[in-house]
Length: 201
Image (cartoon, rainbow, N blue to C red):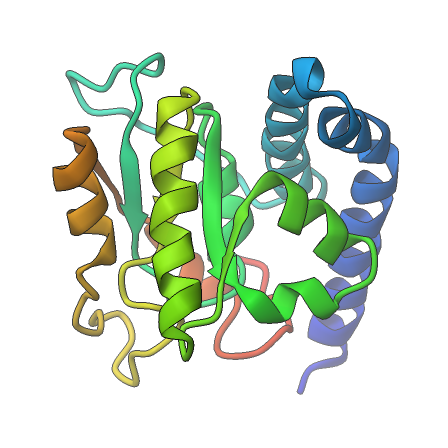
């Protein structure tokens, strides 16, 4: 492994950690005071956009005609690497991620994720049922839902996607909200199956 990749990856980790600490106040205020919750989702959007700027990877978001940033959606995206998470969070739409229960084991980050987003244990039928309930309630509260329909990083033939789970589509049908497909182009070239970051235009 090239020494530049190692140094660059540690720099990326330092940038993310610093941004997380800097924005922790609006994140925590959004958790503790319901009236400020929208501010917390604004903060995670700003963390994502600033992160890519500080690691010198240009990001361009192109919204197709007809996308209304004020509408609610079930947002689905391809998922080939961990960099997909901040890439999706960069969308200027207040939404709740559906993420794996294991995130709860990460100090501070797990607490914030658990209180701002939706966690699911995919091996538990009861947890999957609760995920639907929490998602429906979140849509009723005015939030979109963000989900990787492959159910995680599943494919072994990047950039070919793995088969989709049906959860995102069931939510959209039940709540009668449109699906917003998002293509994260080239993200898999930045993080190739590991936590190491490769600089890429």
